Image 1 (cartoon, rainbow, N blue to C red):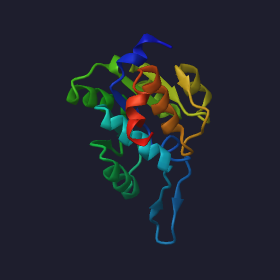
Image 2 (cartoon, helix red, strand yellow):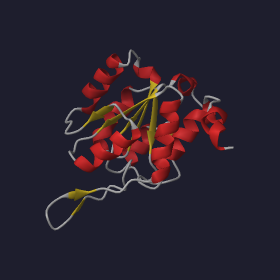
Image 3 (tube, rainbow, N blue to C red):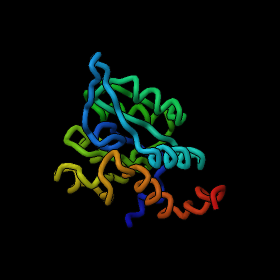
Length: 170
């Protein structure tokens, strides 16, 4: 494993295709619906409980995302972003972190600039080839099916922090 994984303090996620399965569903009233995996939510809580930060940067807008991330206590939520890497740099500055202290998880071409500048790039199993090729870690699970949980476990185990994360559950 690269040394950079031990320095990761910030986990940056895309939404569609990472936190969700990538499908965009509308009801009869034109409201967008999203489904999130419960294990991904627990993983984000564990990550934050250990003092780490989470940021979500997405090109789309939606209240379902805002509600879910609010439940999870995610402070850094950016929707409707065209140039994700610029937003990432702002989050890094806000958290007083360097790019080497960030892991980014993506699935498609708009995520590539962030993946190329972060310290530990990750991809979901069903990411496009270009994203998988730059990733230091590719999950076994696809987006929306527990891939974020898998990634958080991977990071925390590599940092020797997984026992701390699950201490209240054993």
